[in-house]
Amino acid sequence: MTVGVLAFHGDFAEHIQILEDLNVKSKEVRSLQDLAVVHRLIIPGGESTVISQFLFASGVAEEIRRRVREENFPVYGTCAGAILLAKRVTGKNPPRALGLMDMTVNRNAYGTQRESFEATLKIPGEKTPLSVAFIRAPVIERVGPRVEVLASHKGHPVLVQEGSLLAGTFHPEVRADKRIHELFLSL
Amino acid sequence: MSGESCSGWYDECHVNSKRNQLGEDLARMLKGGVIMDVVTAKQAKLAERAGACSVMALERVPSDIRKEGGVARMSDPQLIREIQDAVSIPVMAKVRIGHAAEAKILEELGVDFIDESEVLTPADPFDHIDKRKFKIPFVCGATNLGEALRRVQEGAAMIRTKGEAGTGNVIEAVRHLKLIKREIAELKKMKPEELKAYASAERVEVALVKRVREEGRLPVVTFVAGGVATPADAALLMDIGAEGVFVGSGIFKSKDPRRFAEAIVKATVHYKDLKVVTKVSTGLGAAMPGLEISGLPIKMQERGW
Image (cartoon, rainbow over all chains, first blue to last red):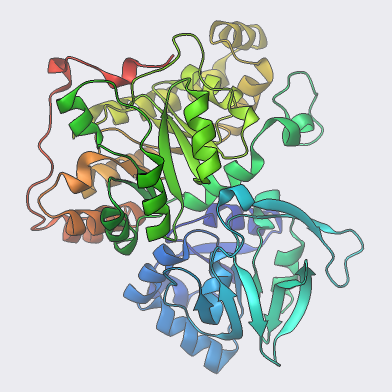
């Protein structure tokens, strides 16, 4: 199994490092040819406006949509990646998203870098909480009936799943916590 | 990194109290992107639409600072606010070297990153800002490894080369990036006593030097800046090992800023793909006019230490 990491921009190297630590083969994805040989995909953190442009210009966006629809292609989005998975994006200058998960995400809802924070999260099946970073993070404001909330922080869902799709508004990869990636690999 | 000895302040044992971890995380999110200098809200919007991952809000781009002379200071907070209101991507702004009061104003404004920059006129002849006292992260310029490490030790969450701003001449950015890389490679060959001597000569903690030697890279994200004027310049620097690119005068002093902005973003993302770099370089029109480094009356890269 090869896990693709969308590598237009953002912290894709950190995701690849975690996959390496888990002994999972990974591949940077920048084109349709790259996407064709991967079995799962991670959309990293970064600026969603930038990633969105390259996703749609390269044709990779349409192919991700098709594979999710027809093959239950597993995709995990962190922060910017979570924004791009959402059906509806609110906030200032929202980017064009893939629209795959039934949720509304508000971009940079916490504010600027001054409001970035660290938190510990409880996730199902894990005894010790995760220590993660929320960097200029979005807020999941609404989830549809088919979306399962796996973790919340101060009343907002922060880790959600819908079928083969997983979205988190925080970054486990910059704290080298492998558990969310293991969860994703088990979907 | 766990299990190491806790000799200096700069090691993993004291990580959370001494480093701006959240700032370093934000820098990671910017990787592979282009940060553009903008002087109006309109330019900021153009930069965002063209794919900039962040904008640097300032009153004059470096080439105008060079031309007009005088003391260059932090921008008017009004201008910074207008730019913050215009875009959703992170907004950076510059302060003079050592000017902690300007930095506190920027923190109050809630900018996302502060650039303690040699492009502005230095304010303190002795010290750079003690960046560990701020929640907002700092990016600082460096011309070599020792300078980069002094800035990291002071709390910088991101390093950029100084290059020679406002010249449209890329040679100094190439020089600084290559020097940093070479000096890191040289650390690997040093014996323990030589490492100590190096740390002492460069006025940095031995633990920090050891970490750089072990990891073979700076401990924070490293961008290039200073003289980038074309998509090919960006591709060249990414290929040498830059993790992203700052473009100052190169965009809004070119003939067609929108096309230059888009082209430099594409060349940065796809720097390994010659077809893309060639395509975006074709028919672009005139880049900003360039300057020869040897003829400059002021070298901005010599500011700071």
